[in-house]
Image (cartoon, rainbow, N blue to C red; front, top):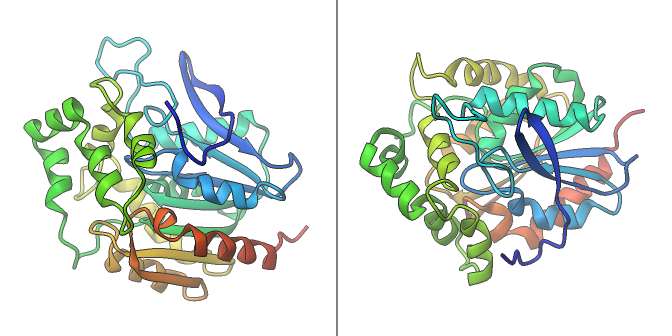
Length: 302
């Protein structure tokens, strides 16, 4: 399969016995580390323009979460070998394992999108002082805002057996996101790069499991971690933060955008009325130089 504008050679590392994660490690080994975390149903492909704009100076670590992108697709059946539990906690643990195995134990810049926000901020709870800068695009680090109605298109996958079957059988979620997640029409090759990696019942497992793990109420498995992340979020207001947001996102809409702006009142904010969920697709020509300027202007204090 061809991946336009993705001139990288991914690496693989075992994060659990028999389960390998694919990841990018681009840029100088001694460069300031930027960890880029994608969501559902994308993969490291979402970050490609930013990696190309930073890798001359910054070390870009960009994993594909287990079950996503070019990583392994383990089953979660009771008798599966290897077995994988598709939960937010598993994602946090995988990230921790990846960075430890790469010897990245110092300060990082956290760049997040979609579920990457909850994964990244969940991981950051282990040592918040390591997070020196934030790059935030269309994501969450707190529960669904009270004023926000849960989208019916997500409820179909989260709560309906038929909806879940359709998502895995026809790869509906990834295909739909590639077509409707932007304002600009993506080239066919780019849409295929986003969605094609999830074609087939086994390949689409994580796109559905992510939806089923969305925390909406007390008792949902991911809720304690998300509530802890929400409580910790204002504590990052003392360090540089960049918010780049597509306002035409039916999931991470202005309710989520306002939540981040309130928690991080000193952030550099760029919001676009003509950009959707995949903000770095609609606005990479503007956002990549802005993010580069932001990072250059706020070097890590040694």
